[in-house]
Image 1: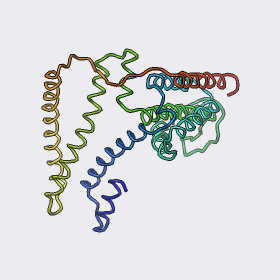
Image 2 (image 1 turned 90 degrees about the vertical axis):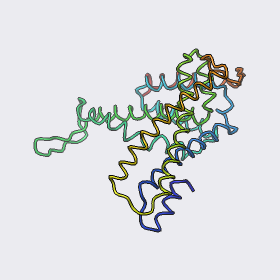
Image 3 (image 1 turned 180 degrees about the horizontal axis):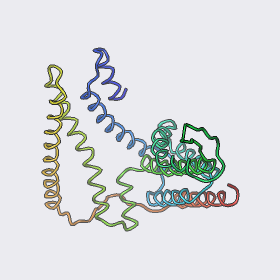
Length: 290
C-alpha cells in the first residue's frame, strides 16, 4: 500500500482528511516513485543491458523521426514497437501506459483544440448555438490525432529511457557526447537536491503535524507555510555553500567523474541498428503508405 493510500485509510475513519495528510502522502509517494523507478533500471531486461550511449542515440533518433512523421499509422506502429521494447525490458505494462497517457490527452488537447475548429475543410458536424457555431473540421481532427500521437510517442520514449537507465548512466552518456560539463553538473546536483529537499519538506510537515492538537484556521496555515518557505530557502542557500566547500576541499576542479566504464558490444550495435530501421520505417510508412 502506498503512502497516500495509508494516509487516506488512517484518516477516513475520522471522516476528515486534512491538507497536511495529503501533502505528506504526496511527498512520500514522490520519493517512493523515484525508488521504484530505480528498481526498474536494475532489472535484467533487454534495454537495461544496452550501453547508455547507444540508448541515448536510439531514443534521440526515434524521437526526431516521430516528430517528423505525419502518419497516424506509422506513429501507431512505432508506439506498438515501444510497448514491445518496454515489455522485453520487464517494465510493467499498466504502470508504463498510465504514467504516459493520464496527462497527455489533457495537456496536448488544450494546445491543439483551437486548430480543430479553425482548420479549413469539411466539417464533421455543425451545431448552431445562436451566433456561435460548433463545427469541428475533419482535417483538424486528423491533425489533432497525429499531434497527440506524436506527443505520446515522444513522452513514452523519454519515460522508458529514464525507467531502464540509472540517472548516473544517463549523465555518463551525455558526457560521452561532449555535453558541456556545467550542464551535466547542474543536472547531477539538481537531481540529488530534489530528493534531499523532498525529505526535508516532509520532515517539516510531519513535525508540524505532530505538534497540532486541534484544527487550525486557514490564516494560521498560510502563516506557517510562508515561514516554512523562507526557512527552506535559507537552508537551501546554506547547504549549497556547504556542499560546494566540501567539494573543493576534496579536490573538485569542475569536471564530473564517474567510476563506470562502457564499451560498445555486438548487442549494442544491433539495438542501435534496430532503432535506425524502425525510425526509417516510420518515415517511409508516412510518406508512401500513410
